[in-house]
Length: 467
Image 1 (cartoon, one colour):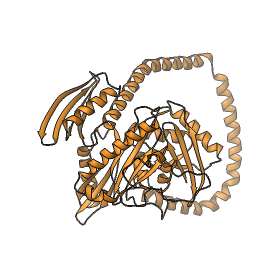
Image 2: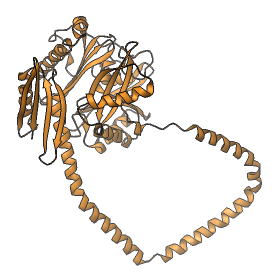
Image 3: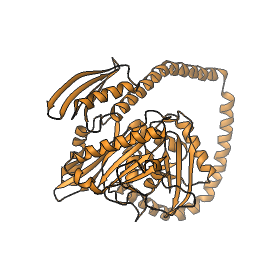
Image 4: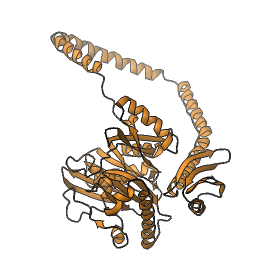
């Protein structure tokens, strides 16, 4: 089993046989190849993947990979217990209400968990289509066969051996926070650092502040305060040991789900271990959520029953025809030799008949094709730049959103290249802080607060225009 964790700055690979980690490697990536979890140069990354596998003599092609949680959306909601067919339709209808973006922009995957005799909890993940598509194409360019793809926070949740836990994973360019209660990830936060060159002390402060906000928000829910009283924190990733004396929670070491070779750091390869636990029997931790975000279009289609039956009849027919085939084999062989001579002679004649006019016609077609390509290339490049900008803007809008707030809608105006963001928050200062953070991000030339209305106590509605 091969697990791959592709981050902005490096690729981490772990090869596991049974319950033993047999190979592990970390390969730095050049700046600009991956940004906020999105692969920007699939050819270069696939080449580095191939070189990494070859360097460690890894010949297996089946892999389990990951996508970043920074651009992914995770939601949970409850529905009445329904039959399977009705449940699927109910989930599709509810998706449009709980997800702030169009379903045309994401691949949605969900899992149903029966939490009582009358209710079903739906765990829903929405991953940007371009992020998943480029990851799939990159792996295929490297000659690999993706079997499963998971989202970083859900892979990390699988590391806990407690049903109630907080998992904090620190990377060079960002961090993940997962609050898991009763084996279900309830809150998931994946945020980038404002700068890759931030001091470790500043990163610790940012993580602690975000963790405190996340816990306070969850405690305000109907069951959060009771569940969070004795929860422990699992730390993993870069510089995670520095957080030990800073957090206001008891710290717990990562459990040893596998047998590790000498010098192996489970904390450094936490995401890989979480990915491996998706398929490891008897060692999946306490997390009940096990999703595969590979789109249905990429999954192999099962063969229809009629096709299987047809092959059975074909095999029977072949068996009955074998004696006849043996009797006619000699005559067929002679005919084949004669036909080969005829084909050779005909090919020579056709080659001699090729003239300069045909070659000129082909050259004209090539020139016309190149001219057509030049006409369409510039609009395509402009469109690609616009799409990258919109994706980057959406990432900032969602990542900087206050933890206690809620985004209702995000609209984009191509004519004015502006975003219109509306939502609610329990405090006016949170909204103003959100607008200030968007200004400070350097992503937008202007951030205007168009509306700021107090709907009721601890509920403000706002509308922002971002250019």
